[in-house]
Length: 157
Image (cartoon, rainbow, N blue to C red; front, side, top):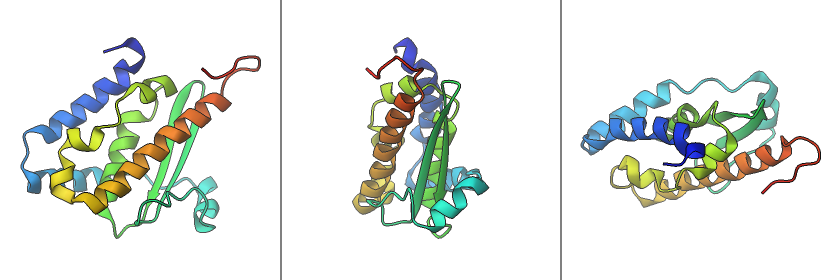
């Protein structure tokens, strides 16, 4: 494991291990447990959400995503419609694993997270496309926010 992706990958590995020995029903229950821990969307983003901004359009469930980089650390804010607890659980996993990490740590994590969590069998392909879209958008936003956070005179790699 490289140094840059180490901390994010270690946190993610711990979450993946929680799912590893569970059957499909237990994985869904754990996903719902994660959903309960997704924080509220900060007030500064609520008007944007209400206006339909920052929506992950590729996901059928209304999902809204913001990424900030402050002092070199990523902050992730996600709002998921309350009627979609499994999607909310996946969003909570992303927030838990990646908030507070450096952009390069997050980008170093391989995008096969859904398979590694064992959620494909439990949730089905339609939902998987939406969850993959959330992960892809997160990576895109981390890349963008990380580039925008570079000190003047530096350019993104």
